[in-house]
Length: 246
Image 1 (cartoon, rainbow, N blue to C red):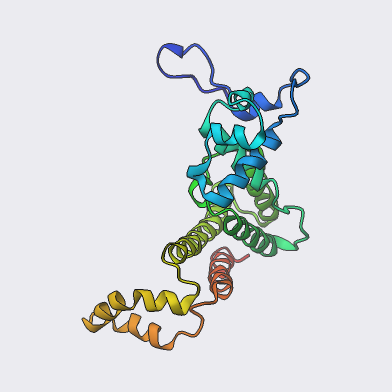
Image 2 (cartoon, one colour; image 1 turned 120 degrees about the vertical axis):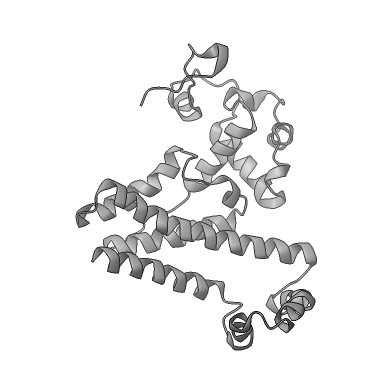
């Protein structure tokens, strides 16, 4: 694919991606700073304090280097986030044993969910369009598992995005609930429901939501996110298998 052209007066200069730059041989470093160290430190900040706490100045302080040192590798925060996302994707155990497309997709889904829960900021930064080497390794693994089933290229991508879209939506819900509880000081499901009770009680008393009210009274797995995730994932995989006779 040809390099993208920069807009405006720099149209004659191709935009070189972070990954293309990092893949080039570099002179011997003058310091021990590396892309790995930069990403690792930035991820630690984001995990502990959120993505907004990650700044180039804060990063330099944590690394014990001059404020401009990281700019040898990244042009600013946007590329730093790319580096961080690639770093956490690089920790996914994509070589874990799996038999067949369904087992492969389930394993990938579980690992992606675990990644999002361990690094909640990734639900904001991880998209199908933020391309990096370790991110692309995920569809590569999935496509290879689906290749022997006769699906065309477009259908293969649709299946992959259906599964990963489910994972992202489910993980975003879990991460949002965790953040809500932390914000209000609620430690578990009972405290969460107690905190939301005034609003929920009013809504149920309108009589407009009898089916949802039945769920509130009868559901026994409200506080079992693992069961909820696995059940939803089964529905997705069953649907794919039935639709394509896999």
